Image 1 (cartoon, rainbow, N blue to C red):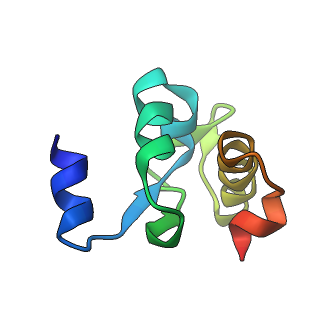
Image 2: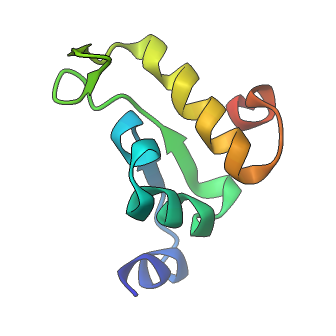
Image 3: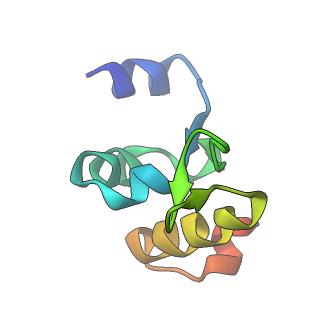
Length: 78
């Protein structure tokens, strides 16, 4: 419900690696409009493969989002 209120209000949404590894995160990503999604790492607060997240972790986020959107990682990056 909060997501849909935020969408109506024109907010942007950031997606980090942790969201791509949880069912709730994946459900939220499916509902975020493509033109409102921003990738981020949330580093150093989020770990990726037992290490602090770095900017390169956004590539994995793009790949996960691409799978949800059924498109290429490059399209998500664009």
